[in-house]
Image (cartoon, rainbow, N blue to C red):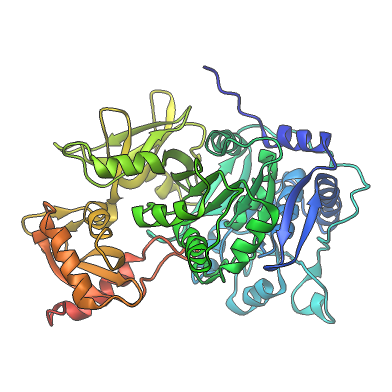
Length: 533
């Protein structure tokens, strides 16, 4: 079967054919929102492109876009793309200055607060020649922060932008990794990568005409319209998604009758918990996509209670460098939990999506090795990081393969199994433990919110420490007893040298779902010598 990969510009042209359809709704709170039609979106992109051109922005220019407003993000990204400029997406974090020194962007587009941080922290210093401020202007802004870039939604009476079709290999975007498993790196997407990702997302989302998507991840708001979806972007706290008031998520979901919900486990947990506390159901939802971290059974069950019969919950696997790769439904996850395949451990990720290949490199006698991925979703390299590109990318069989850094196996049915990050192996004098093998079991213990396995000490002589977040109101003794029962039945349970309770795990800024194990291990090291348990 031949798969057709529509370019970004072919998808934009289809949007222009139905210029009055609403494709983006930006929620400004739990009870108010603003709708943007296709005509308004395309007209806004044209006007913004004209303003950017007048400011000296042109083909090949790298432009940081740092705004928390979904409409402004979409308009700025589409307008830059129409000029042949390269949007650079990065979250505000401690490493921004180093990251932008690598990228050397000539343009910085952002909210006033982003420009204040740029000036104070030296983001892009020596590189940024054009500073453009979104939002309402204030006296002295040009002198203090930069010139205004009007991104207000126009009436939509003007024509769509005229966009020359780029070559598939042209650089389209740079998106930084979250930094949760190492230093953030700028991932290069060319136009063929974006086309492959959109086609793969079509296969996962399976959108129907008139579908409404609730996207709880801001950058995805730029992809939703290209997939033909009315995209609702709720007011998520993008610097700490897990601290978002749940009403900001559930209110827009119910008000707009979202058919598809996309978010990290942390955000989906907010929605499920809010529904459980208030006796709410989500009758319009027929598909939920979880991404950013493994989907645990407890969250699946909590979500299922709020969804109508027949609704599907999917756990999607991928990375900034290759997204999406594979997906598995909640029914299959339940069946595998009830009857796990003999000898398998960890979490099943499902089969690779159409057009995507996966293999396991450097496998040991049990088939455990590093997951590598090939296909149209794989990015060509890292920006200004040739060593990182050489370490992660290789050509074989006429395809570009990306080493994910994830450990896993492929079973006899072609399904991927995830065992944790290669960098997070815990190695003692006579044992090697993968994080997902232990945590997938430990997380099922009563009273446990989640667990994290870390190693304390030098590699090869580490002590295995299981850090535990308790469910609210659960006594430590109850949790310890439940953990002993679960780990007693686990083949590596006796290797756990210490159980350490932690009030809240440090996590990545992007999803609040990936655990920052380096920080957690440093915290655990302070207690191990005293035998804390």
